[in-house]
Image (cartoon, rainbow, N blue to C red; front, side, top):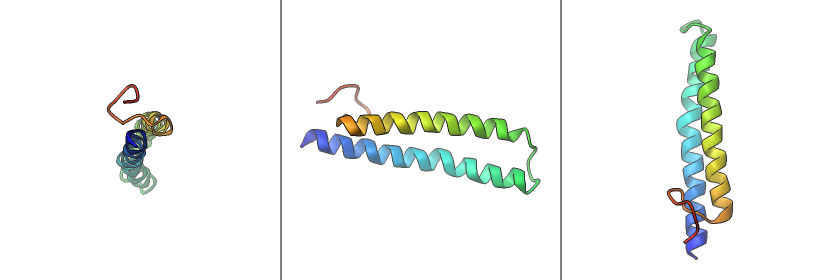
Length: 75
C-alpha cells in the first residue's frame, strides 16, 4: 500500500514539475515568435525543456518503482 501511495506521489510530482517547467517555456516561445524577446532566448528555452524532461523522467521512473519523490529507495 505504501509503495502505491509513494508511486502516486511521484506521478503527481512529475505532472506538477512538467507544468512548472514547460508552461513558462511555451510562453517564452510565444514571446520570441511575437518579436517581444530576442531569438537567442531559444537557447534558454532549450535548457529549460531539457532539465524539465530529465526531472520528469526521473519522477516517472520513481513512480514506476513505487518510490516516493523525496526518497532514494522503497520503504
